[in-house]
Amino acid sequence: MDALTPNAAGLADAVEFYGTRVTSRLLLGTAQYPSPAILSEAIRASGAEIVTVSLRRESGAAKAGQSFWQIIRDLGVKVLPNTAGCKTVKEAVTTAEMARDLFDTPWVKLEVIGEDDTLQPDVFGLVEAARILSRDGFQVFPYTTDDLVVAEKLIAAGCEVLMPWGAPIGSGRGLNNPYGLRSLRAHFPRVPLVVDAGIGLPSHAAAAMEMGYDAVLLNTAVAKAGDPVRMARAFARAIEAGREAVIADPMEVRDMAAPSTPVMGRGVFGE
Amino acid sequence: MTSPNGAHDGAVTGRAANAMRVTVVGAGVAGLTCAHAFAQRGAQVTVIERRSGSGQGCSWYAGGMLAPWCERESAEPLIAELGLESLDYWRREVPDVPNEGSLVLAQPRDLPDLRRFSRRTEGYEWVDGARIAALEPDLEGRFDQGLFFPTEAHLEPRKALAALTRRLTDEFGIDMRFEADGSDGAGDEADLVVDCRGLAARDQLADLRGVKGEMLVLYSTEIALKRPVRMLHPRIPVYIVPRGDGHFMIGATSIENDERGRVTGRSMLELLGSVYALHPAFGEAEIVEIGADVRPAFPDNLPRLRRRGKTIYVNGLYRHGFLAAPALARRAAELAFDGTRFPEVMDEDPREW
Image (tube, rainbow over all chains, first blue to last red; front, side, top):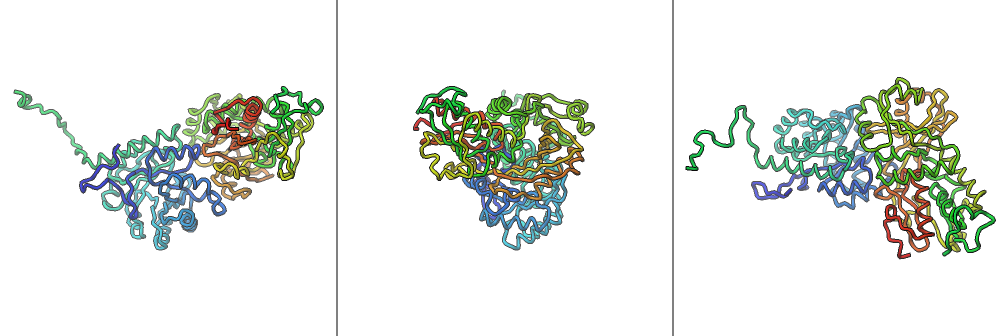
């Protein structure tokens, strides 16, 4: 339960996004909860320090969603506005600009959706929008696939964080392509990587952390649980467990049995 | 403060001179049911409403589903409890409340949503394609599985509130003042003010917020439905309520936004896309009306009675206006007449009154 476990350098175990250090490695979405009250309670139970807020649907005429946003602001967490549901570069850029004005933050979780059934990112539009926004001073958290080359291009476009999907948004399928996610981690050892979307169970989140991912972002798995507050807590614990495991340097997998109790020479010390 | 006169004897002629004088502010579903509940207890009730008639705020755009079990899927148990009481009220007090139950359906690929829905509630039976066709012949062959809630009902909100308004004036002699904002001093001489203004009461209830809902009404003679049908979808759930004479109310979006009136193309696209998936006949239907309003909600989306001084606030009915109002109105009257406390809907201690 100790999120502040010191690492080798004696520092608290924190992850840094664009210079902002956070110790909680769970990022929570704020959509689809039964009520703002339950949302607030779930966020508190999760210990999340960053929450994403969807702008597009809630905006309408400027500031029409103020009362909901105020509830989020009152939680004292850092807001990562997102461009959920945007399908074109222009839409995403406009939404990001609106978010910067409303939330007074250069952060944006960039989503450019390319396909309606899978909500798969349009990676071409994503790279283009990331370039435009980065040049404009935004700090972009791109929601992308596990494609290595796209990841390279996002970094070149100015992204300092990558958020590959585990599985399609809201599907709860977990990590669809563990190999791809592992390769991405190996390829970008120093870029903060966040598994975003597709997580259904705490074990999925723990698996992502055990792969060495820096954090996990999820929404539906908590919001649509029968008891969102309890599920938020379950995820927080799983993510801490996965992170602790990585720091603890897990054993290697091997083909042959390696008894934990010596078989030969048993009793040597006892006699 | 007067004692109750008992139910129904407070009609025009027989009202006691010392009857409690109550001003209800707002003539939506909350205001009208409160006026009714207080009049039944013998109060001398005046209703003031800033619009030109009753039921023209959120109530105008309501779906009118009396579906406590369906709502139980996403709402707290309290809503189902209030809903069951309110269901009885509407069946008893207004005409034309078809007891046809309600149907919950999903496309085959969204079956997990149907299973999830079933786990979170009760009062239903699983129905297969044949049973769905027997219930709604026009949906034959379109769905393999669904949930049928036989004890639920629906009403036409506008007709129901018009009927209730007539009863309040004719039977109880309630003074209904439209296009009035209370500045004529209507509340001044009252013993009690029942504030049912919805989101407009945000000037007094700071934790109230608006949740926008958009709806549309379609007209088609190519399809008939007997009962409300809900279509589950991970992103765009939709319901369709038959209004009779070929009219169907389609609703409703739920957007954290307090902007009144504006209907977006995207919302209409989503609602229409969903009902088109329910039955292609809706693609040919005539769009009779589109509309939007802002529902008042507290942070937990549960309704409240709050008493401050000589005012009782009845508010925060969120998506559950028709489902919650009669049950709240009864509680408001019992709070005023008998001093009964209802902790389930009262988060402030009224004893300071």
